[in-house]
Image (tube, rainbow, N blue to C red; front, top):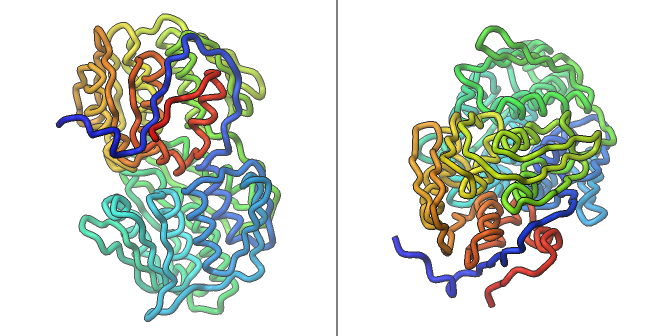
Length: 460
């Protein structure tokens, strides 16, 4: 397929800077912001969230909870959110369900589907065309076993829109598949205290039929396990009693009777976003410090630096920062199941390594904002790499002589941010639709400019 005409679509071209040294603090974690918003929205009492991320994914979550009477006051450029639950009420009716537009935010639709089914009311959750191609059937099936009402994913293949008509949950034991997305389990975990709170206060028959202890069993493989641990920690910060049970190769979660309580909650910088800056050090042979994160951060994606270390970088840790120092890079064979949001970042670093890099354990990446295996391979080949696709990942053979190219981003924020890294070393790389980074990091290209010390070339 020929390269797209860059004059027809906005693009940015990164001007290679040479060695890059510096330090940066990325914006707040999207994963933590949206989890904290769910817990705060359904808590008893009000909450203040600090260090929050302002992006498309968090804005659609805020708009959705506002539609059921929850006040979210956005302050400090979006970094502080004051959540007032005093006006909260069930949404819609069977004839006129509350409409919630979710854009292409997987966390928002999965977390809200579970939470709203537990809270009760009538809703229709829908998004952009790509959202209606992203599977949610396993989550809907899990909820269908306990809902006092009905739930359906109405697009082919068990995809959104999702329709909900609920009086809460009437059961206390669920099972959910874990091989497509850990967000299904996280959504059910966060919904369980909402179901308990609803049963205790609504006056519906669910109180008589449901135990305050909820158990969720994971069927089969659980991908991206660190995100489940993160969910449990956020829930505990809002007063929930939650326990993750590991037994042999199986995982289950139990939640107690405690309802969420309003709190003041501080959100870490985004570790997935930090991966681009650590990769900048690796690619340019520089030294980059990311402030606000440490080895014990709640986000598993800080483990990306361990992969860079295996490739030949040096890594330094403090209690509030992680520094990567670039060095001669070599290819690695790595299972990235638990840090799958950094696969695209690593794939671009692999272009500049000696020898091939094999990425394993990320079959579920095909069901993200785009096919993050097939589409990633397509664009890497434009840069001169040979890429072998596998069922669970890909192998990147670095080019002998990288070539400039105009790269598609598929409306995927992580494609745009990752491919920008190729332009740190290869002159003439153009990234189409750079504004798609607004999904999770609106200021990414501006922050990268400040870090490398000069401006990008932008289309006019």
